[in-house]
Image 1 (spheres, rainbow, N blue to C red):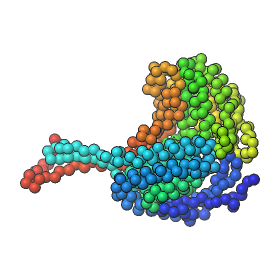
Image 2 (cartoon, helix red, strand yellow):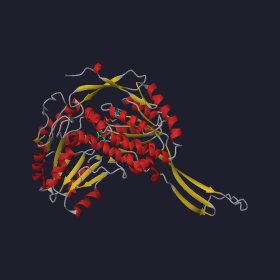
Image 3 (cartoon, rainbow, N blue to C red):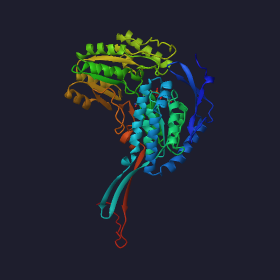
Length: 504
Ligand code: NAD
């Protein structure tokens, strides 16, 4: 049965420590992609809501920035504990609105918690530096201070993890944070807000404002927003970076991806096929680090494609709540039909369709937006299946003759988020990791998402701005450095001034 829009709950903003309908009257439906049902009506902010959230954040940032590091850490420790206790609840919300299977939803939450744990130790990152006696009687020290108000604009594919790539570090470093989540799966952000409050975070330090382009534009141009963290598709990342820098803001804008795995003939083919299968089809391929291109070198190709097909046939596509489900639906019917079209184009252009998941029907969920694992072999670099980020469960296989050719293919691609090489040769791995123009590289590891104390970020069209996200770069992004040069003359030993530029 399809639920009508009027039967479902409203999804509110979270402003100044409380859920709020705001004054905007526009709403947008939120779907469960596994059933096709409308599950919520999302309130979209108007300008008044945006002005209110920013004013609250500005006031909150002024007091929060003065709170001791010890107190900030304690709140984050409590937040970590609450997130852990509420993982099941959060995961169910993620599965209901995103579609990914429950264990995968729990996985993204645990990677988000990892960033909270990093932020608990913010005292280490904010220690500053001190140089004694740089000149007679003069010392220099430097430290970092918060920006003030920062906003995070996040994509649908990780509704918990990506907000947690940003907010814990921004808040630990003393900023107030406004989250503008994806309109497609916005509910998890409200539980996150509630848990922050329960952890003791003062009202206004973490807020949630729902909306689309207008809300984003309002944040990008608002004079009281000092920094913007964005994660989403490349065209929007580019737009966000250009617009926010025009308004004088600090911006990190992470974009889309086309992640290649290079498979050498000397690779352990069983391991490679098993891991590439999971990395291509996990979360229905809707991960920014999903492997979407397998580059088979020389003799690797036939064995690899056979083994990939064997694995792909066993993937259990189902509702994310179902026992044993490996993979859920894609996010929208539009996403499904776009993917079907691209696969059709590749087939027509001469690619070999090894596994076709386009018409899969999942029993009892016939209205869900399901697509099964799809493998296209002998794809050429001109086909849309290669040039476009498909963002679904489609793996394309390119065949090349040598490692050099594989490196050239990957480096010629405009994206540079993640990549992996499967090999048993240290020399091949070293050549690849040194020459490849990609921000995150795995060696026999298909999804090289760095742990929280390293930073995450791609190169080329996968990231606009100087800073990667979370970890040490996150701390640098959310703070500004200040250097103090000080002299405390002893009363009896005044130092005469000179007209020369200060030097040693
Ligand atoms: P998206 O770009 O459509 O949306 C991201 C955010 O931008 C959302 O909050 C959305 O409301 C907002 N937005 C959308 N259109 C806008 C516009 N015209 N002007 C201003 N704001 C706008 O991305 P998505 O479909 O939600 O997420 C999938 C994309 O995100 C993929 O391309 C994926 O590769 C990418 N992604 C990248 C990373 C990374 O770390 N590089 C991580 C996750 C997802």
